[in-house]
Image 1 (cartoon, helix red, strand yellow):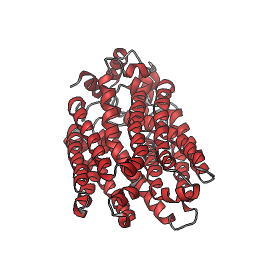
Image 2 (cartoon, one colour):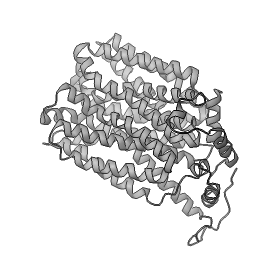
Image 3 (tube, rainbow, N blue to C red):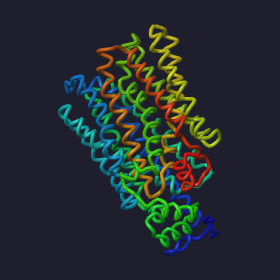
Length: 454
C-alpha cells in the first residue's frame, strides 16, 4: 500500500513531478470535497425548491395535474438518462473532464428557468438539468471515494448526503422567502445558478483519479499521482481487480459477476428515495388530503431540517455500527411509520410522530446512497455502476412523483402512504439478502466482497 512521503512543510512551490507539500495536498482534498459536496447539494436544492413554488407555477403557467407531475418528475427522468450516460463516459475517458462538464450544463439550465413561458419549456429545461445531476451522481462521489483513505471513508462519503439535505432545506427557506413575491418562483428556481458558479470555480485544477489510471493500465501516471498527493491506494489489489474484471460497459453490470451488486445498489436506493421524493414534492397536497393544510408550510420546514438531523446522525455512525445495521432496521421502522399514518389519518399525534420518525430514519439510511454503490463495483466499472444505480433510483422516484398527485385525487392519502410503506418493505427484504458489509475495506477489496456475496 502506498505511504505518504515526507516533504518540507514550508516549501514555497512544487517543481513538476515532485511530491506536493502538505499544504497543497490539503488544498486539493478540500477543493475536491467542497466541489463534490456542493454538487450533491444542488440535487437537493432543485428538488426542495419546487415544493413551495409548485402552486405559484401552476397558477402562472396554467399547469394541468399531469404537467405538475412532469415538472416534479422531469429532473428525476433526466437523472435516469444522465447517470448511465456520464457514468459510462467517466469510466471510459476519465473522471476529470466529466466532473466539470456536468456542472456547466447545470449552470446554463438554472439560468434558463427564469425565462420560461409555459409548462413544456420548464419541463424540458429541468429534464436537461436532471441529466447534468445524473452525471454529478455518477462522477462526484466516485471521484471523492477514489481519493479517500480506507478508514473514515464511510463518514466522508456520507457527508455528501448531508449536503443533499442541506441543499433541500436551503431551497425550502429560499422558496418560503419568495412565496409572497409576484413571480417569485422564477427567482427561487434560478437561484441555483449562484451555487453552480461556485461549484464550477472549485473544479478547476483537480487532477485525474489514480485508481482510474490503474484500471486503464497507466501505472506510471497513477503512481506519480499517488506519491505526489500521498493517496492511500492498494495498488496490487487494484491491478488484481483489473486482471479479474475484464468486461466493462453496461453489459458487464448484468453479468453473473456483477448482477448481485447491480440489483442491490439499484433496489435499495430506489426504495429509499421513492417515498421521500414523492411526499416531499407534493407535501402541501398530502397535508391537505390529511386535513392539515393550514400547517403545511411550517411542517415542510420541520420536515427539511429533521432530514438534515437524520442524515447527520447517519454520517456520524456509518463507520461505527457498519453499513448493514444502518440500512436494514430503518427500512422496517419507516415502513411501519407510513403504515401507521395511513391507518390512523385522523390522529394528529400519529401523523406528527409517524412523519418525524419516517423522515429522520429515512434520511439517516440515505447517507448510504453516497457510500454503498461506490463500494460494490470495481474501479473499471464504478461510475458506470453508480450511474446505473442512480438511474434506477430516479426511475422509482420519478414514478412516485408522477403518480402521487393522481393517486391523491383518485384514492386518497391513506392509499398513497400504504404504497410507500410497501416500497420500503421491498427495500428491507432485498437489503437483508444482498447487502454486503464493506466497512473499513479498501475499495478494491470491498468490491470483491460484494461480488463474492460475503
